[in-house]
Amino acid sequence: MAILGSIVKSAIGLKHTLAADQKDPRKLQAEQLQALLSKASSTSFGLYYQFGELLRAADPVGAFQASVPIFEYGDMNRRWWKQQQEAPDITWPGKPEYFALSSGTTGRESKRIPVTREMLESIRSVGLSQAESLARYDLPPGLFEKDILMLSSSARLQRHPNGHLEGEISGISANNIPGWFSGFYKPGLDIARIEDWDERVAAIARQAPGWDVGAIAGIPSWVQMMLKTIVEYHGLDNIHQLWPSLSIYVSGGIAFEPYRQSLEKLLGRPLIYMDTYLASEGFFAYNARPGTLAMKLALEHGIFYEFIPFDERGFSPQGDLLPDPEVLAINDVKEGQDYALLVSTPAGTWRYMIGDTIKFTNLDEMEIVITGRTRYFLNVVGSQLSEEKMNAAIKQLSKYLDTDINEFAVAAMKDDNGDFYHQWVIGADGEADETAALEYLDATLRDLNKNYGVARRKALREVKLRTLPSGVFYRWLESNKKKGGQMKVPKVMSEEKMRGFLGFAGLKV
Image (cartoon, rainbow, N blue to C red; front, side, top):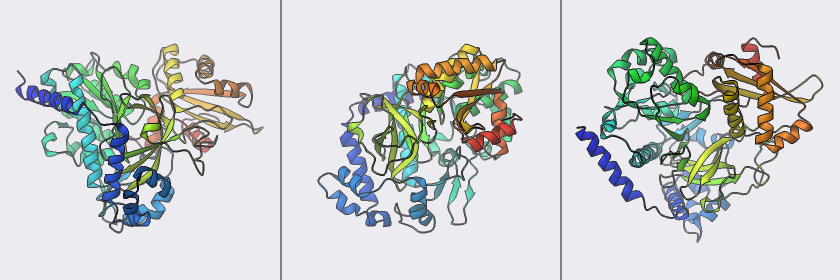
């Protein structure tokens, strides 16, 4: 009998039971904000925006929203975070020991996001809440004694001239794994610190037979490639021949569904799938119950959230933030509405628009799904295509073609007459008739989005589609030094980036 596993499972069940009776979300969030304001009241930012006065207001949330502007990265970095790299007590007490580098899917230079000890504690707290949610699943006690393979970006952090360490958030987290967890954590820091992606995966494949993995966590595209490498290296039919206890896959970073079909070809039996919302700015949501990939918003882990309707109340038709957008607190949100997310965190991130759009799918459970990016929104001629709609259409196209489509990209481009058209490139690992694929994708998008249908009858007169092996997308990332770990293929590209990608792939524009 798995005695340790039984104890751990019982403890998780008890903790989950005790935590089940939660407070009102509005009150919880007000408490998070007041704690943040109190902690940062003596910082330069706190003094400038008079956090002490905000705390004494009859409505601290309303006073905070009225006094502190909304920040995007450019302003926040230029006015505050650059100074935070050199001096203490700028937006949060002390100097951050780490700065997280964004994955840079937009093609710009990586952003540097401060990561404080309190932020790392918040991340660990949300991770523990997800672990506690396993009490809702019918799992054998022995599973709680198995290894957990976390496929992160390189855990080899770089020392900045200003003294802090920097790397991607998953690599920073790997360097701060609690001591009690280190015995379960695979591949271990020695392998995780290998910088070259292919060398790191090769090392994982060599060591894999010595591990008893029960759960895997990581971005679907790279997890799939890792598992395929292990299966081929050891001449297996599926990964369960090596790791029979493997039961859970924790996804994150990008939508999981486009990868489900091809991932399951590497398995010997079904897994429990769980999703997470871990960004450079914090760990915001986690899958908390069976039967859904929607994620529970982490309302009591030190983060304060605000929501801007992703429509005419908050944004221009081109996706630009309005000068005076409508901003909602947690008690005012509605199910099914897309919102741009603002966060204030214990890393000195204040009313910061991280660029993601989300929607609530279940307000009773406070569950959300990520619907896309404010900039990954194709609307140059009124088509109003969100990443969520694109993912849904690609999933249907994959079934129609009976082939795996793991990656895709689309751009609004101009022809010689100056008229816009959509250029699609899909990563189809199998035979695919481009004409049939285009016709089906176009018809599916018309069904999924009435605005797209209107645009196709008017300004968007043409749509083009090319197919490529998925590996071309990953080689393109590698050519831009963006291979592995947390790196993601941008679903919506600028015209310039699409032209560059097509040129890399040897395709004529």
